[in-house]
Image (cartoon, rainbow, N blue to C red; front, side):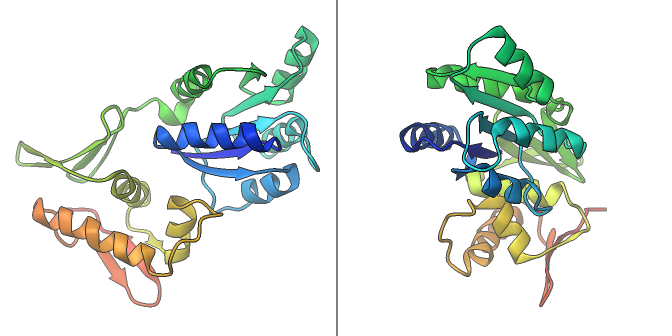
Length: 230
């Protein structure tokens, strides 16, 4: 799951990112609201949840929430702030925040709040994603291949799981290398140029070994396409 973290306090931002990364979240961390909006306004960026500090350089966290909702964007938002009065909480929620966490807070509570946001959001109601003969189970992070009643679990790394999930959410669509890099790696990370091709080889090998050959097609000069099994 991909998170946009907008926090201008370096120590707090680093602690949040470290915690989320340890729990298998992919985190894009930015320090100001202007940069955050550029990410949110990019159609290639598909976030699971956003964490906004209220007071930010440039566009405030409150204004980011308002812009999202004005654009009919349902992205779940957790607001972080030192403002703890009832009036402040009402203001934040009315602006479009889904939950409100007052500083200082513990990382265990932050994780619990994120899980609660995911449970309440319509896009997370289903714990499984089934496309063709493949099923992703978000509850235990496994992938299984179902063929004529025989279920085989395919062992995947976290990155392979994310890559296959991205393809399964976009069946029969051409996905470019750039789109895949934007979706599966942090924007600030210095990924090597052939990282997508290398990850694709690893994923295809495991799919083939599990009887799922030729699911992902390479379209030279265009990208890749996940072909539904008949």
